[in-house]
Image (cartoon, rainbow, N blue to C red):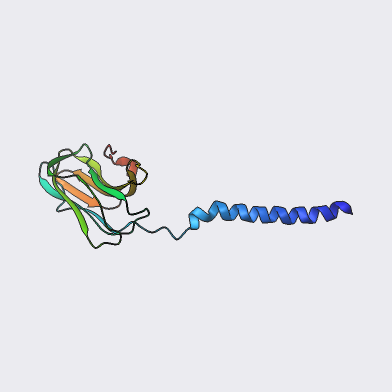
Length: 172
């Protein structure tokens, strides 16, 4: 009889600990307080890239909600795969941004496809916490998925086929 009296409180404690463990484990997956940093983050080409023809590449961010304090520096960088070449313009912007600002940060460049294939152009927004002198940390990444064959091209913000068929740029 004494063992049954001991078993009931032990079972209740075990169930409470199990529930607390599950809540702590699953909290990161259900946390809705995390918001996107940028309301808009666009990576576009002015036209589908044809081999050896110039096209304008525009990367744009606006409406910021930062996860860190006010003393931070930001960087927006575009990475081209080996099948593309930068003709002119910039692939990097660095500076300070104002929380919940309407300011638009835009980097423009002219690029050219130099090889047929399945390519990914990658744009990454980074931040650097100046209070703690940390290195740049990625915030958000966007991709353009591009397939160029037989003098035609397809461009999408999602993979056009199996993503392992694509060649990514060598990024940071």
